[in-house]
Length: 84
Image (cartoon, one colour):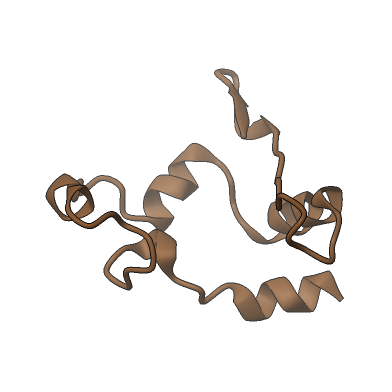
């Protein structure tokens, strides 16, 4: 994502699936921008980023851990619906 100081919406969004998707990267980008609110304030709210959890993320990484809001998969049904 690329942001402009005067615009709350990102001025650029790009998804790179590294060839691992049956959808084009352009289509994935379109789906992501339809479903997710990509404004900085919305991202902060969605992932509760005003409460840093540096200690938890520094040990054993933060991938595949249900303790972190950015690892939740609750948007999958909506992503699948929009992709069809």
